Length: 106
Length: 115
Image 1 (tube, helix red, strand yellow):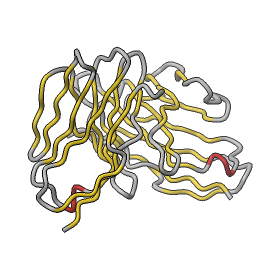
Image 2 (spheres, chains in turn brown, purple):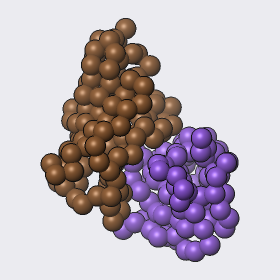
Image 3 (cartoon, rainbow over the protein chains, first blue to last red):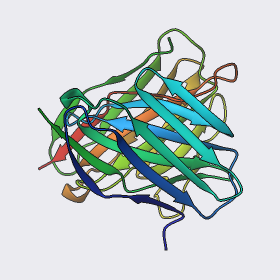
Image 4 (cartoon, helix red, strand yellow):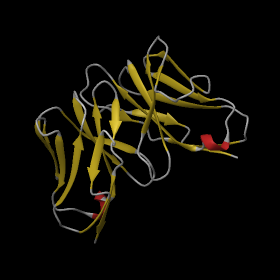
C-alpha cells in the first residue's frame, strides 16, 4: 500500500468546471505539498500546508490533519490547468502520490 | 521568488560514459537540495538529499557509487550518473529549500537518454 493515495488517477473536465483532487496519507507528516507537473516535465510547487486552508488565485488547498486527507480544488477550470497534479508529504522522508492527470477541454 | 536552474534540460550519452547534471539556486542559498528521478507515467522518487558541505543521504536502493552527489556550495548541487546504462534513462529533477522559505522550488528537470 502506498503511503500517499490520490484520486482520481485521471480526470477530464469541461472548461469552467469546478475540479477536486483528493489525497489521503497514512504516515505522520510535518507538511503536505501539492505540485503541478506540465507535459514538458517541469514541476511547480503550488502549496505547502500543515493545517487549514490556503488559496492562490483559482486554486484552493485544504488539509484535515485528523483525517489525514487533503483536497486541491480548481475553480473555473481552464485548458491551461491541464497537467499532472501530485500530492506529496514530508515527515521523516518524502512520500509522493502517483499523480492525477487532469485534462480540461475547451 | 526563489528560482532553481537545472542544466542540461536533456542529454543523450553512450553507455559507459558519465553525465553530470547541475542544479543551481539563483537568488537564495540552498542549504538542502533534493534529487529525484521519474520514470514514464510514474511519480517522483526521491533519490537523495544533499546538504551543503556534507555527504549526501541516499534513499534505500539508490547506489551511491553510481549516482554521485556533490553539494560543495550553498548555490550548487551536482548529480553525476557514472558508467551510465540504458536503464538509467529517466527524468531527473532537483529541488531546493532554504531555511527561510516555506516551500520547495523545483528545477526544470533533465531528460537523460543512454544509448
